[in-house]
Image (tube, helix red, strand yellow):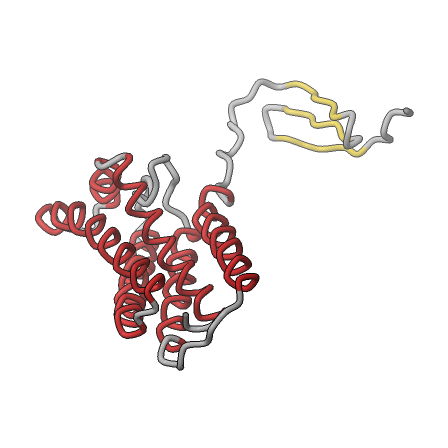
Length: 211
């Protein structure tokens, strides 16, 4: 093992790769549909990426997991370096798609998670984690106690799930329709009154009702 922090960062990267590969396996057509909606890549490159990306994630995740469990530093370092490049590519691609104003799903999940800056930030964070873990992996192995191994396992699982769920959790709800009928809506819990008219929406603060 490469130490607690090295093992933690490496585990988060490996688990993220495996979760990505699992999402593509659950819904194989999601990535191809997302790439088509983005309109950034040409058709030949898009078809190649839709097949190659899930396979690459799966291969890196499996090899990384084996290297972590067996303590193979060189193998783990190679996986982490390749993962850093892959996640960096994800960040650059999604940033490019957002700059061009392209919408559509992110293609990174079995769910219809829209492409957003949080997808780019997650990819960038994983690229940084993979780079840091690759550097730490050069250090001499540090034996961990059973308690440290348990803590590392739980922490890496929790951090991986939270990081993976970030774009869906930060998903912005659709804006309220501008064609709502005119009228007045009172919000008792906040003490506000919303007036909808043909000219727009106005809000008036009122005293909250007595309990």
